[in-house]
Image (cartoon, rainbow, N blue to C red):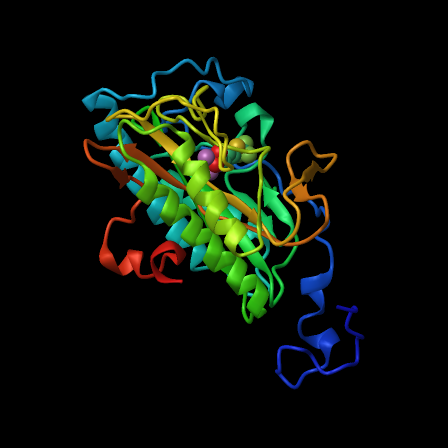
Length: 321
Ligand code: MF3
Ligand code: CO
Ligand code: CO
């Protein structure tokens, strides 16, 4: 496909010139300017890295006590509600920093700490990953453009535990191939969740995701994986999204971890911007992601990052798009 010319009619059928319509959708994402660090009220409980930037360990057991699980259910519900609230603000013209401000405000209003803030020195409260950004995009003064896709990744810390979830949102009118990417990515997460059962190896997750992505001609990112989570943001327990036949760790009831496949239109290889956070596809093609924190039950898998009510669920791309 040749690059469209500025004054051609836009391919989306709007009748507008391409330069006034979907031009931004083909320009690479560039780093913008960061706003000053946002403060968290002193009365809010902080994770151990909040001051130092260094999380103390990754040795937490994957199977949770009932006490930790009860607290995690509440943090996960909150994370899902914040994701829906921030997603409601996605539209052409809004900056990713404005989305960060909203995420920060909603999180602290609920008495929680925004987990990304100062995690290994990360400067913001939300990750905003646009178009070819695979994950960990840093909110800045870039305005979302009609035709963009943007992943919002929300993690909150309350009652001493984290809840982690993300979804990819469409900005205005999005082209068919990007819509297909987002749909297939959401299906990859759903199929992975369906594959989880106690007694099976962890690699059933990557097998389900890879099979569906392959069928649609899409790639599966390998450099970033799902993870155990609880009192620690990321534990040493890893959940690869591609198929590793030799990975035989067995799923057990009571385990809690994330599944967060990143699916690419082209190749799965990524590179990192010089900011040390922003991961982009090597080939510059688009990528999408969905994430849930899940619990292995006695006979399957329960999603913990479900919004608190039906009206919020109807606004969530995992349950609607
Ligand atoms: N929420 C991301 C995940 O799904 C991690 C973000 S770490 C940050 O694991 F420092 F970039 F915020
Ligand atoms: Co995660
Ligand atoms: Co996340």
